[in-house]
Image (cartoon, rainbow, N blue to C red):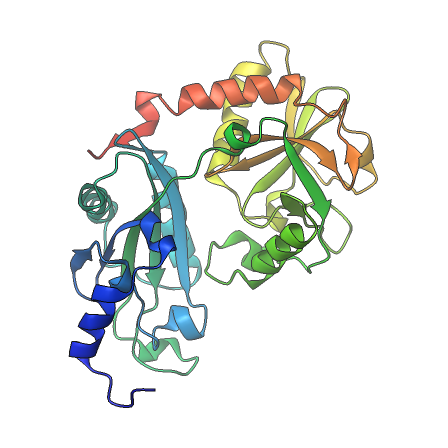
Length: 323
């Protein structure tokens, strides 16, 4: 163990440290330096940052497809709403953030990428006192965009029942970096050979997945998602609900769209189950808690919602060109 590690040593570490997972890290901006790096070794956060030792920060994730970001306004609006909720003053406007996102994507050199924005209280101490941080820290990261879930798994997803206590109320509704329950849910899914785990609130009603929203289609063709008090309102889910109300209901494919409490028992009788998320897009659940959903194949509502959403990914009104 070297006891006097310095900047020269770190430069040598950066030159030689090339783990395989770095291949998916394209570029990152940090307001700590006010610069962009393409060296994954420099894509770091100060250890005294409140986001590191207190979970005092927010994040957003969205996709860039063929040089344009999808639904950017909704993501930045949610980021601003989260900042207000935790009393974090953002010194960057939406235009500032969009400009930085574009610069990071250009530096990353990929027209398809997943973009992550992190806003923290900032570095400046190691206690829980938020006032010890002089200024917030902004980080924008461009990384590999994985394929949508159904592209890689056309047979559909397997979902289990999570045993991890869920976040509720305020802490469920703010997209903070406090994701330990979500991490444990994902670990539980992987350990059980499932794709996702579904959480339930204290009253036994369905909530959400580790990083995705969840919905069901009843036998009378009503699309139901949980009430907003118990979940993080995902931008993909909200947009899909708009598309469902605007296209599938008038076409008679759906009889309605509702926010409702759905019990564990009701899940045994639904016609379809759906997953919504930035990375998986719209995903059909074909097995739940070890039993087939419907006939065990992706259903007609999923097909129509997926079609509508994929068309929306190419909708100029929903795109912000970056490259």
